[in-house]
Image (tube, rainbow, N blue to C red; front, side, top):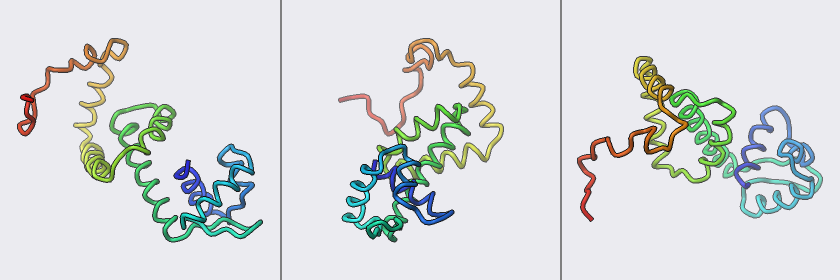
Length: 158
């Protein structure tokens, strides 16, 4: 929830100062919930907020907002542009995934997305493969799990 508030404040603040009532409306929550949460964000150093005033991100809050948006953008590009997922479905998946992805994985995914999007032929082959997969069957059958080769550094012995 903290990241949702910070991201919303960041995006809203580009057009005008952010008022608590507008933030509540944007997030679909009650004004009292916003007040409580904003106090928590002030205590953590992410925002400045005077009573009945605008909400302003600190440098720390702005840095976190940019990191959140970077993750969102990468995951959205991965699911929509690379995997060919419908953008509405991707939106809900991104918001589930964004909270558990590490910086190390994010960097690798950004490289993968950039690579995939730079090769139209590669993307066409991937989209063909995705579109012809039998998604209605159990995952093991649809993807033929176990038929890929083991990575050279991966050990099969325990």
